[in-house]
Image (cartoon, rainbow, N blue to C red; front, top):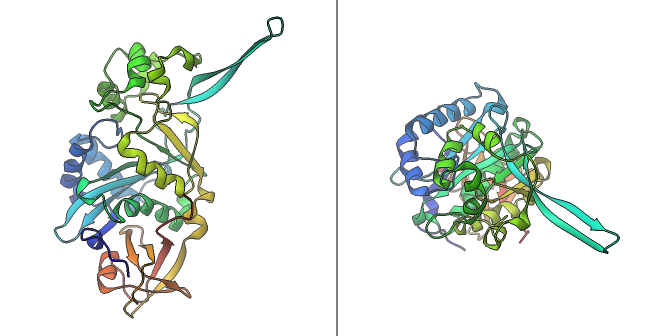
Length: 350
């Protein structure tokens, strides 16, 4: 039997509560630059928690919702991770990306044909649901914790698919040097915005995005005009984000040539109907019996909106029934006879 890591067995991903604010602020201070949706700003964080609680209570419209989840180690009630799903982006404030396109130049007389990559300022992804704000404390980056935190959101979508639009996206942090600077920003954005990367990132996180349309050029930008150091990082992720990208791609998201306008990080997307969780997750009834020894790792979620919870367990879903340990039932806040949604922890996609 495969055993969980010491930290892993006691972790649960759950819907945020109002009393989680202090723990969220602590984590936000550990993230560093580049994560626009999770900044250590008390007023912004307080407002986000308020919206999240209203989202789980279903007192606001689905497109206005921001489902914020925390990972908690129940031994000391410590928050060690965070992730989120926004119901829709770009409906209340502009949502910009660069779309990588192609322009063709040719001359029959000179027998020259050239294809040039270009960057178009785009609002194409407006209205999509968004996966965002993924952060896991370094002490917990072992075992199944990273997969549990990232993939828990897919079980939520599978349980409540009617709440989401057809398309799901995830903006990933772009490449940064060890000192936190961005080659793409240094050689493109800075020329138009006349401010450093952190300042532009902070303004965007606060919802002050009108400056993007006001200052960015409307015509296509030729990638070839950029220095090679800036060209090379288009579509690259931050070193800390590479594992998260792999997990998202395993669940069905893919890169289609959209990048962040500040650091050129890739935007992954998928049709929600094609997600692995929609295709493979199933409902099961919790049995009163203790589970048998197994090394089969699965994600298990309860089916309650306001107290939604997900764990990584070693159990088998057999004939629409599942045996969970007393600890697992405690983590999920469920009892024998309750329905749960299950899915294999690991995807067959590599």
